[in-house]
Image 1 (spheres, rainbow, N blue to C red):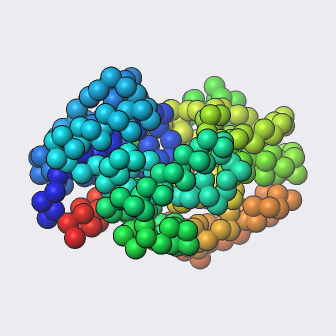
Image 2: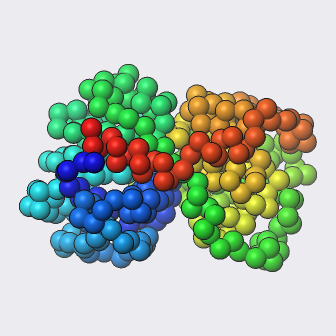
Length: 347
């Protein structure tokens, strides 16, 4: 087992829980169950904690006076050096002065650059150049992402392994009562669900066009967007599209369990957790035919061309699966991912 000690970058605790932050939270919880006390600690800013954690073996320390990126780039690395701990960064970004170990979720800033602001793209190019120079170890959430990194940053890819997400957190959610569907104007198995931000690479316009082509169907969209980072897909909503915005885990789980199908037409992803979450709750998943989804979901999904929304829902959902959801779900767990990460850090 590794003799090094690590300081986990806890900036994600102060951010709204979306895919990257969910990954960080659940991986920390899984690590906490298998590591001895003292090996890892979690440092976070003195800021409003949005994602509280209850940990037994990983101490949480709030430090410094700054917040956000300024905290991550100054007070966090300064603290890690002072206490002789290697930074462990689970959300793409790491301190320029001391990157340590970094999880790379995707290369969207390079491969789908139009989805991001100019400042964000410049910032991440700067970060990755620094990672090449000073980063110790790296891991990605999929082999697809490793291959993407290898094309542009081979020095990083040479130090990289895969630590995939799990789905078991969905089993711990207290699902909202089915009566909540009524309050939303929905019926069980009477709607199609999509969950994502309005970033262009999430391809929300495909869903709108699909809804236009299938006016008899109800489409529910949950998710929000960080306008400071993403350039929005500002698509006009139709009468049969219901936009809920950001919803609680309890409502999200209810929607996933109750939908006719879960739609995820992304043009690019580093892994794509929402379909895995939906699959774990018994939903049929309709996803883009892109390499990373073929890697993760095999033949358990209905695949669509994300450039062609002229599809009849009835015809689409008549397709059968060659692989069961259980075959996919058994490949992924937070526990095994935590064990894999710990073994990698020990090498």
